[in-house]
Amino acid sequence: MKKICVHSKSGYFHPKWIEFLQKYGAEVLATDLQEPGSQEKIKACDGVMWHLSMNPSVLQSAGPILNPVEFALGKKVFPNFKTRWHFEDKFAQKYLFDALEVKTPATYCFWNIDSAMKWVEEAAQFPLVHKNGRGAGSVNVSMANNKQQAIKKIKQAFSNHGVWHQTGYCSVTNRTISKRIRNEIANFAIRLHDSSMHILTGRMPHLPRRYWLPEKDCVLFQEFMPKNEFDTRITVIGDRAFGFRRWNRPDDFRASGGGKLDHSTDQINLEYVRMAFEISRNGGFQSMAYDFLKDADGNPVVCEMSFGYQNKAVYDCSGHWDKDLNWHQGQMWPEEAHVFDFLHENGI
Ligand SMILES: Nc1ncnc2c1ncn2[C@@H]1O[C@H](COP(=O)(O)OP(=O)(O)O)[C@@H](O)[C@H]1O
Ligand SMILES: [Mg+2]
Image (cartoon, rainbow, N blue to C red; front, side, top):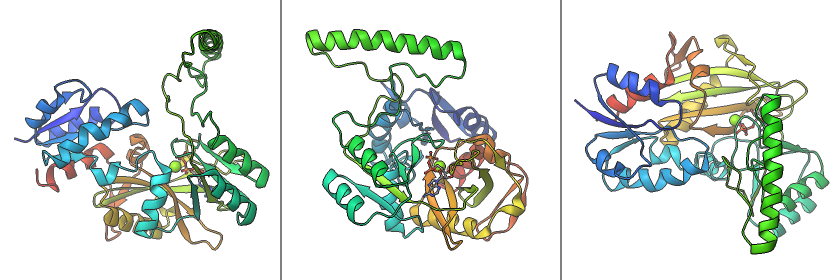
């Protein structure tokens, strides 16, 4: 019997991974891979699965922990390096898309302010979409309608303060008003305390609790794709592609995170499905979700891809396509597809 080590401290794929691993006859070692001794546990297993999240505390440990498992111990990892190295990094994706010759909106990355400013002054065409490297649900995606707005983004990105994904020590995006007020008050008290301590002792202020890592000295703009009322999310897991559409928020160009999904299979452009399979095959991705838009001529372009996605939205698809674009009726949890492929196709 194969034994699989599953990180069960964070993420939301692991409960169903465990269920399906057991269903398909594997033994599961559920553990916290960030705890000391995890490498010893992994050595006793045939493979490792970890649902990486956007949290910087998770991302900073994933490479040091998983890379030796994959490259020194030679064990199978989900997500493997090819699937995970560009996760939560739209800069990395830009260069990878170029390398794989993926059709995308023209994407412009700058690593120094002079070349960014030169481009804005001399070559940029507006409107543009500005994106931070990290972020999901459209939170770090916005429009730069003109030169002034683009320059503001550039100056922010190359400032001494950097760009923060969460302002304040405690998040104030919580839904209940009472919690937001409590967090605002707590943030104010912490700011007061932090500034006094900084003046008196030089101690740096608190970092935000969850998204504590800023972005700095990099900026990314993307050509705006007009007249897209929705994006089409194609999720490829091995030989399966799941598709649904996501409508934009009202009076907004952004779909991701809006929550208005349409699972009508007949509305999915099969060219998107074909392209998604091709990118996954060329990139060597075990599992990947692609956001498709149309360019001004109606041609498909990928505006983003991600290893992390909502499992329920994929499960709500009534079936999936195989790589020959044959339709297979029947719902499937993505976690079942991950596990099935991990156990069978990787030969472990
Ligand atoms: N270049 C673009 N042109 C037009 N709309 C875009 C473009 N890029 C992204 N969008 C819209 O913004 C949404 C969020 O962008 P995306 O890059 O997918 O970021 P996130 O990581 O937040 O999902 C997409 O779902 C799409 O609707
Ligand atoms: Mg997206």
